[in-house]
Amino acid sequence: MWNNWKPAALLGAVSSLLLTTNADHTSTIKWSNCSSTAAPRLECGSLDVPINWNEPNGSQTTIGFQRLKALNATARIGPLFFNPGGPGGIASAFITATAQGDPILGEKLNEYFDLIGPDPRGIGISTPILCDPDLWNKRVPAFPKTESEWQELVAYNEELGKSCRNLTGLLFEHVDTLSVAKDFEAVRVALGGEKLNFLGLSYGTQLGATYAELYPQNIRAMVLDGNMDHSQSETSTLVAESSTYETVLNRFAEWCTRNSTCALYERDVLQIFDDLVATATKTPISAPACKVSGACRSNVTGDDIRINAQTYLLFEEANAAFGLPGWTALGTALNDSLNGNASMLSTALATDETDRNFPGRAVSCLDWTHGTKSLSELLYKEQLGKTVSPHTQGATQTWGIQTNCIGWPAPVQYPPRYYDENIKNAPPILMVNALYDPSTSIVWANGALGQIPSATLLVRSGNGHTSYLLFGEATSAMQDYLITLERPAPNSIVNS
Ligand SMILES: *[C@@H]1O[C@H](CO)[C@@H](O)[C@H](O)[C@H]1NC(C)=O
Ligand SMILES: *[C@@H]1O[C@H](CO)[C@@H](O)[C@H](O)[C@H]1NC(C)=O
Ligand SMILES: *[C@@H]1O[C@H](CO)[C@@H](O)[C@H](O)[C@H]1NC(C)=O
Ligand SMILES: *[C@@H]1O[C@H](CO)[C@@H](O)[C@H](O)[C@H]1NC(C)=O
Ligand SMILES: *[C@@H]1O[C@H](CO)[C@@H](O)[C@H](O)[C@H]1NC(C)=O
Ligand SMILES: *[C@@H]1O[C@H](CO)[C@@H](O)[C@H](O)[C@H]1NC(C)=O
Ligand SMILES: *[C@@H]1O[C@H](CO)[C@@H](O)[C@H](O)[C@H]1NC(C)=O
Ligand SMILES: *[C@@H]1O[C@H](CO)[C@@H](O)[C@H](O)[C@H]1NC(C)=O
Image 1 (tube, rainbow, N blue to C red):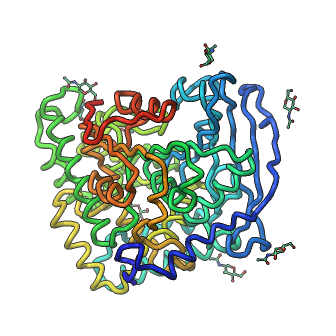
Image 2 (image 1 turned 90 degrees about the vertical axis):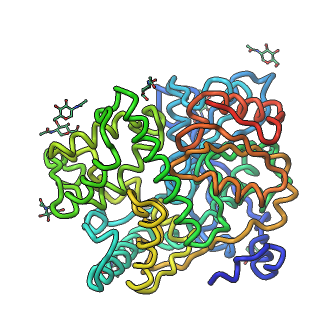
């Protein structure tokens, strides 16, 4: 399986398959006014593309996107494609918000660029991935300890995946990032063929870099913020994310000792965290607010706490654009849990077939290998997670992918490997990463940097997942580069 674990130049067969870019596909955009009086400038477009790019005359799927034309026609540079990450994040929602008077990507970019939010295939206003919400909501062991728990997990994955396959159709097997990059190229061409400007956050960096290895000559500017490294083995990927989550939990605990905003001010947060996990593992802690709303599980296990706390660390301050709570909320969530109310750490439940968590699972299972074949192999991984990250114990988005995709009824389409050497033809790219990102580790940023010769990495010396939406010095550098193509010098560090 890991024969792709070598420089791309040695991968003759894979490379030529990859570089089948299917440039002959042509289709026309259908435009509408999005039927919204609240957002008069907003335009909605859709483009049909092949479900399977290797069968261009086969069944089609629809890519939906939104556009906000550049405000200053004289200063206009071209189209700027945006991706917020996930996988599963809805780009079009960011464009809608901007059109409705909440410029969540900042005011500056829309002066110069047509903002384009294409929802990757399977997501948002594109033809969606659908799954059975009742199957999704079934509680199964996230960290199996016994053979029967292992069997339960694998059977669950398979049954859930089959429900998605049934409800979605063939698209279910083709929402991998390679296909998405080809869709983006089709949209770029259909919009008139101007060079691509791209701003990708988190998973959006994997999408951007994949586009860059396929179509390097079609790029004007590309920002990759909060980086993934698609070349890593399962073990390395798990260790990098577990370690960086653990590091940021430690920084949160230290912050609580000196900032009275934290509900656990001056207390031993790591000890409290461990005790809560142990208590909830014995008897799940009640989540009364979830019992009332039905939007989340009625109680919270130790696994749930380790898994769900990561989301609270993504942004130090609450982030409205992503709807994320921030560090103060984690202090409150832990304090409340100590007092028997774990509502804030409960796992959300899906309510219908279009739940926004479904597409992310489908994309992840096609983009990353998940080769664990037995309980025994999984137990080694659990042991590894506990060793490198004693408090969070390996609970990460990566763990979710590596366990929830076992038994998934669709083959991996875009397995990890080094970027093809064609990427060396890309123009200067700007990468950005925080040193203490609880999700996309600085380890991944360094790994990706080594594969993209034209990239420079701007380091933000702080906490948090991605930097663009913080609107600090890193954001200014990204905006300046997108507009002028001037980048910060190599090894530059900013504090915000
Ligand atoms: C959108 O609205 C504008 C202004 O009313 C109109 O000129 C244009 O034809 C409409 N476009 C579509 C695709 O309906
Ligand atoms: C797709 O259809 C076009 C037009 O009918 C044809 O020229 C082309 O060879 C077909 N391509 C494939 C891969 O079947
Ligand atoms: C539009 O851009 C041009 C060229 O950069 C500039 O001279 C002009 O002041 C801008 N107009 C507005 C309204 O900002
Ligand atoms: C999927 O569809 C097949 C055939 O219609 C059916 O037998 C099966 O029960 C369905 N599976 C799920 C999980 O929905
Ligand atoms: C305490 O944390 C809050 C929330 O993150 C932050 O706004 C504030 O600046 C911090 N205060 C100090 C003294 O660090
Ligand atoms: C922590 O929980 C206790 C008990 O419910 C409560 O009295 C206290 O106000 C909470 N502290 C903060 C800062 O929220
Ligand atoms: C926790 O919730 C599950 C349903 O998700 C339920 O089966 C179980 O009995 C609950 N446990 C406790 C201790 O409330
Ligand atoms: C439990 O916590 C939630 C979330 O903070 C809150 O909305 C709810 O009122 C609390 N419920 C009880 C019974 O304390």
